[in-house]
Length: 264
Image (tube, rainbow, N blue to C red):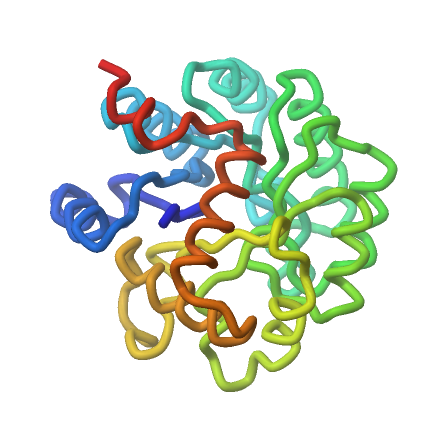
């Protein structure tokens, strides 16, 4: 299993991180994509440093839509530098969040376009956060056309939204939301999407799946989402594991598990 999107920096796990990672590894998680966003560039710096230390962890760096209005030019410049560091495999999460609107919509859109430009410049895929903004997000992705494609993280749309992103060449990543009772549209999309275009993630420490809902999420809980996805598609969990792991390695251009473990 690969957790294609989790937040592992000190703000969330601090001294517990080693135990959290060990629990995930013990149940078969072979790689983690640690997303570095928030707190200026501190989270991005932590993600890059963590990936440099741990052979099964990779990093992304970016500007979350919540932070679009407060990101300075100096921070953008630092993110440009960090995006070129070894073992950084994506730009993001970036995108549009019209649910909370912590930043004005026009500012979010400008930051999203700027982030996609950084993805193009570095040859990295873009990791998109989209909430209540699918039409605008798809339009921006179509116009900016990141060459390495990308992932719609924590996908929350239905079949129509899924089709729009898939037609643009993007992957869909499914989180613990897939297990929630009120997420019928997301389950429909998860059953609809081609097997070679889906990923699984925890978004830890957020969105813990049932039966852990209401508590802190962690990468070991990826097994719950994967099992739900397997049930929706009528396939063995092992087959879904193989497909989603291969897809994650493809989009982020990760080494295979053996190569990663032997890095040093």
